[in-house]
Every structure is written in structure tokens, then in C-alpha cells.
Length: 365
Ligand code: OGA
Ligand code: NI
Image (cartoon, rainbow, N blue to C red):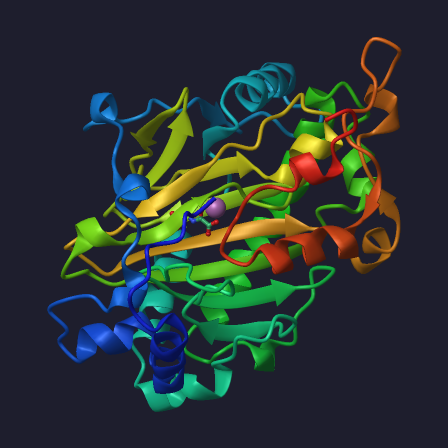
């Protein structure tokens, strides 16, 4: 949860003024601000790095997907590695995933180009409305007095793997379509491997269609004149099933492990995978959704693209909860069933206070 600041400033006024610029954080940087607006200042206690974690980089488990296809020589080994990483880390790095390096580089580059377009070209996409398949904004906090983060975001939602090409900004259309094609392949393979890692038939998750849509956050973290006062992304866990992230070489992502913030350093060509809250719920707490955040830096811009897997329209209409095949007398359901709509509504009302819904749905609190 993001603690709110002691406010001696007019939060509502500052946010309104900032929103009305429709220029995002990039607009502030272009205007040459030397001090960040009060709206972006986070309370000291959330900014501190854990002292012992200073400069400690994580050695994330590395999952090599070569030979992991059905009938592949390394399938069992890879399933076991994912099972272990999912239970002990919640985060891991994926290599040999089949996405060409040029496709990843082109994706990051076109997102930079999009965010650096003249403001006038981006304004038609500027909205803080939720249900638009393509939108650009600055991740403004919804809750009174919550601080804003030092980043802008282009959100692209593929529902049931489909988005009309014309909806995608032309600055990144070709690259995005190419990238998503590969993302779908990786996600389908991961859905099989995750199913098996849970001890289920390979096609279990794919039949459930719980990962069949995807939402891309194409993030732009500008260089910050006062990086120690703000954050690129607050401490949060992801809400969905599986997140697949690419990032450029600047770093800044940290994960919370054993109560310490650890750097997740960029590795060229690798995907960073982590599980979201829905995966933890689906697995009845066997797989973990781990909190993470992004530091602001004096260098930038940093570009990253997070692809979240979300349910298909069909799956979204059905009740969801821990998978019944995983439950027994010894392992009763930890969460009650719910509708996705209710779940996403919960997060909406939380705004930037990104506490997970675990307690809300937990049985026997
Ligand atoms: C997110 C996220 C990390 C990053 O968008 O949920 O955690 O490195 N992004 O941008
Ligand atoms: Ni995240």
C-alpha cells in the first residue's frame, strides 16, 4: 500500500492542473522542471531502500525454454524449474523463448518514439477512462492524497488476442503487432508449462481461457531531477495471472524478497516473468505473487513493456477461484470464488493504493 503524504498542498488542484496539461511527466521534463511538483513526492518511508539490500542484485532463477515444447527433451526439467521458481520466488527470467532480439529491441525503441512524439499527436489518446483498448496517460492516482509516479504509460489491450490494427498508434503499430504475435506464442507455451507445474493436464489453463487476453503497459520513465523523492512505480503486486516484461538497460525494477528490496537487473534478450494475484488465488497459494516497484533515476528515459495475461470474454463471465483439482481435505480452498468483474472493481476502488485483494477473498481470515 502506498501511504499518503502529510499534505499541506492542494492535491486536487495540482492533479487537475497536471491532468489538464495532457502532456504527462514527459511534459514536465520538456518544460525543464528542476524540482518535482509536490504531487509526485512520496513519503520518506516508502522511498527507503532496505540498507542491507544496497547494490545487491538478484540472481533470479533462469528458465531456458529450449526443448520445452510438447514432447521436447527438456520438458520435464523446465516444468520442474518453473514449479520451484513459482513457489519460492514468484519472479524468474526466461531465455531461449523464441522472440528475436531485434523484435524486442524494436518494441522498446518504438515505445520510446511514441512517448517522444509531439504532445499534439498523443492527445487524442489521452484519457483516464478505464475501458479504452488504447490509451495514453500518466498513471494518475485515483485516491485523494496519493502521490503520482514519475512515468507515463501507453496501454494497449488485446481482448481474446484481438485488436484492430488501426487502433494502434502508427508510430508503433508494426512493431507491436509483431511483438504480440510472439507474446501469444510464449504465453501459450507458458500456460502449458504452468498447468503441468501445478500437476494439471497441459491444456488445463488454455481450456480455462484465463490468460487469453492481454494488456500491455508500454512504460516511459523520464529522467527525474529529484529521483530520491519519487518512484517510477509504487510497491505493488500485479493483479492478473502472468506478467512478461522486457526492459531496456537502465534498470530500476526491484522485487521484495524476505522483506528486502532487491534489484532485478536487466539482462539483454531475457524476459522477466512474474505471477500476479490471480495466479496465486488460482493455485490456492501454491504459486506466489510478489511485490515489486520501480525506482526513479536521474538517467533516462527508461523504457519497459509489461504484458499482463487476462481472461477471455467467455472466461470473464464465469465464477473464478482456486482450481478444484488442487483442493483436498488437507488443502481446503484458501479463497472463495468470485466474478472477475467484482475483482477488478475492487482494484478500481483502491486506486493507487495497490493492496492486493487476497484478504478480501480469503476464507477464514
Ligand atoms: C508493472 C510493473 C515494472 C517495470 O507495470 O506492473 O511492475 O519494470 N512494471 O516497468
Ligand atoms: Ni508490476
